[in-house]
Length: 396
Image 1 (tube, rainbow, N blue to C red):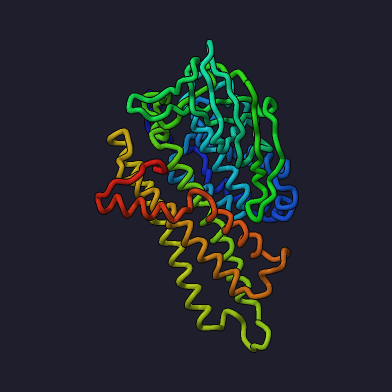
Image 2 (tube, rainbow, N blue to C red; image 1 turned 90 degrees about the horizontal axis):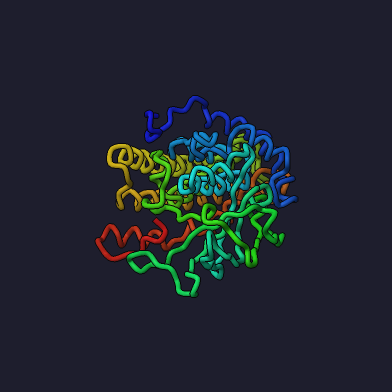
C-alpha cells in the first residue's frame, strides 16, 4: 500500500488459512444452524474473531481491505464448512464496501465497532423524500441475509425531492440511494422459512417515516460519490456479490464431492459386491466433476486477477472485464450445481438422511441457484455483448 492508501494491500495475515480453520466447527454446527435458521452465537463469535466480517472493510476502519482474488477464496473455505455462514459473510462484506462511499465520520459511526455488521435486502416499494439535513424514509425490504446478527441495516430507495418529484441522474436515470439505520430502529418480521440456506436468517424489515441524516445516506458504485481511494473500491458490489456467491456454490460443491469420495471408498451398494469406487462409471464421472469444479474456479480467479491488474494500471474496470466476471460467476454456480447433483444422486439412499453430509448441501446448492446471481439470463447478456448487440448492464 502506498502512502495515499491507493494500492492493493499486502496481507500480513493468511486470511484463507483463517477461514479454513473454521471449517470443522462450521460443519459440526450445520444441523443447529439449520434448525435455528440463523448462525449460533458461538459461530458468529468465531467468525468475528477471525475477522471474516471485515475482509472488505477499509484498513482505516480496522478492516483487511483484501483484494477480490484472496477474498473469494476465503468465502469458498467458509462454504466448505457451512453455506449459510458463507452467504452471510459475503452479503455482509459486500455491504461493508459502502464505507468507501461515506464521509469518514459516518463510516466510523457505522463500522468502528469491531462487531459491526451491515445487512440489507430488496424493497421495490421503498422511497426516501428529501427534508432538511436528511431524508424521510418509508419501506419494507426482504432477503436481509445475516440480519439477525447485524448491527445496522440498509434500505435501498428511489429518492424524491421535497415536492414529490423524482430525483434523477444527469442521464435521466432514477437516483437511488441507500439509507443506513440501526437494526433496533427497524421493525423485523421473522419469516425465513425456506428449503436451503436456512441459516442466513434473511428476514423482512421495515421502517415508517424514519428520519435518516444526509451523512448516513449514500449512492453506491458511482465513481463521483466514492470517497475512499483504495483499489478494492473500484470494484462494484455487483462484481463482488457475483464472484462471492459463486464461491459459496463452489465451496458447497467441494465439500459434497469430498464427502462422496470418502463414501465411495467405503460403501458397498445393496445388491453389489464391490464398493462405489470400484465402479468404472463412478470413476469417470468423478474425474469429470473434478475437472468441472477446478476449471470453473480457475476461470473465475483468472477473471478477477485480470480485473485487478487493469484497476492497478488504469484505475477502473473495463466493460469487457465486468462482463467476464459475470460470466465466470454464473458459470461457476451452474457447474457447482452439477457436481453437487452428481454427489447426491450417486450416494444413493445414504444421501437422504439428515445425519449424512449430502442432503443439506443439496438443498443449499439449489437455494443458491434460485438467486439473482445464477439467472440463466446472464448468459444471454454475455452473448449479446460478445455479438456486439445492445444489452442491459444492470447486473454488471
